[in-house]
Length: 381
Image (cartoon, rainbow, N blue to C red; front, side, top):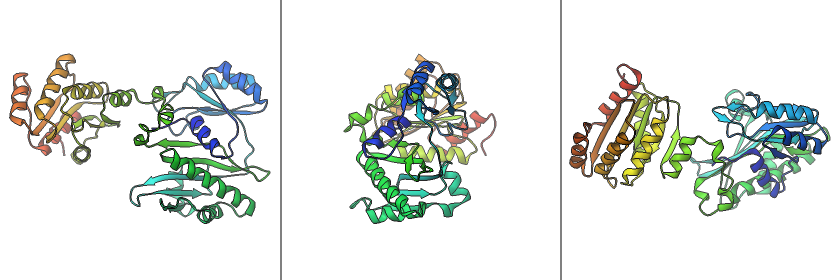
């Protein structure tokens, strides 16, 4: 679950990380009032779950309350990477002497939380990794002990040479790890972590992603979710208990099981297509899940063909077939549909489809090839 910058800052503040004050506005008038309260040059920052806000015009300075009102009005009209901006964060501008980056991610390879630190802050860490990988120091944290002071100092020395700044940065790193681990984070970062002309270390930005598995036992964290800032198809899928991630391709995929879903997406790519989504209906045999899945996929205008790839084990293929028939009766399809069903109650499923004028394949490769060809208007490679 993504949370907004202002929410991540609130969490970081609770752990003692030095962050400038800031308030959220939903209207230009509110932004003007907040800027007047601060009485200094402010930064107006779009609150949206998308990177590249600055490049999209979502981060701007305002020297007066009137200018803050005008800037906020401009930003609140933006749509950044398909997401409308409905909130802005108003915070005092800071004098910056240098910028660094610090972040933590869950690394599946090492099965540990891994710190990344770089003296080249203020830009995407991916860009730093691609162009100057020597400017990134990585450190895996032993989950038995957490981040130790000597480890934090080692990371801090990579960022600064001044001993006072090293100690201040090490303290922030310890606080960041605590915020990350105690709130079920899968990512936490500060970019930029700046030094002021007076030599102080301050976190000017904050980003945090919460592991979805944390939400059932942490309703206070789950309450931070802003569904208006998410893809509506993903919101609908979550409510239907579907695992769904929207992608940019043209082949809509409905699959049961994460492994089969990944294999299906790989095959779509292999045969020259582009998957439009990851959608796993899971092991349930509830036909309503299939109805919801088709409704979500058909709402994507980029989808040119739909592929059902079902391997029935726990999932009964006849229930999937009933779901497909019900969904098509409710909302007739405007794009071609390719069905591959095999496994539990396969014969019954095929008969259900046949009565509705539909057919199914049993070979996975052939089904994917056909779906790609229909989506691309030609032959799969």
